[in-house]
Amino acid sequence: MFVRKLQPYYTIDGVPQQSGIDIVHSPEFSFSLEEAQSPMELQNGIFICDSTGTCQDKVITIILYPNNPSNEDLPLIEIECTPDDITICDTDLGSSEPIEGLNNARINLLMNISYNELKSNWKFPESNDFAVYLDNNPLISGPQPAATENVFVKEIKYWKLNNNGVRTPVKINIRAW
Picture 1: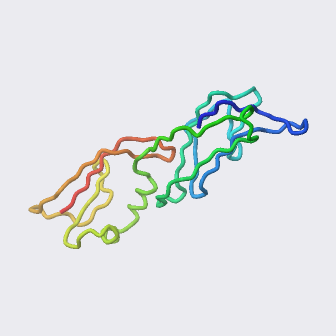
Picture 2: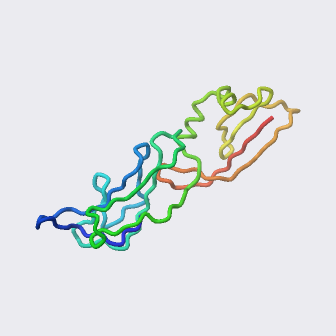
Picture 3: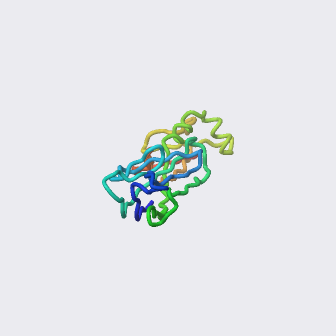
């Protein structure tokens, strides 16, 4: 979000009112901020400018994440200025940067499902088996292949995301036999 201008207060009939920017988002999602953005504060989901003066030319990184890790819907996010007056509050929801990666909560979901249930859900052939490794540690593993069996491997370099959207590189190794 880019804040061109946000004055701390405006008046209605001579009475000062707090101005702010409300982040409206899908209830299935929560958001966090990449870092504190002084002199702006977040109070009850509304960005306000502290009383030191007008906030100008601030970039605020908002990270949306699903409350339910199995949710694959795209989030709705809008911003609303109070008051709706460009001379007091002027902001845009800038370009978004989709951050792709493996979510810890979804990884934990996979680890809590039995191998046979995953194999069935993923419609993997009954006569074959598979394993998935994350940074050379077994994530999903069924019966081990026989020493004479051909094992087909696909290795992918990807990202693992923490709850704040920070990425760390990981190596995913998928084996099938």
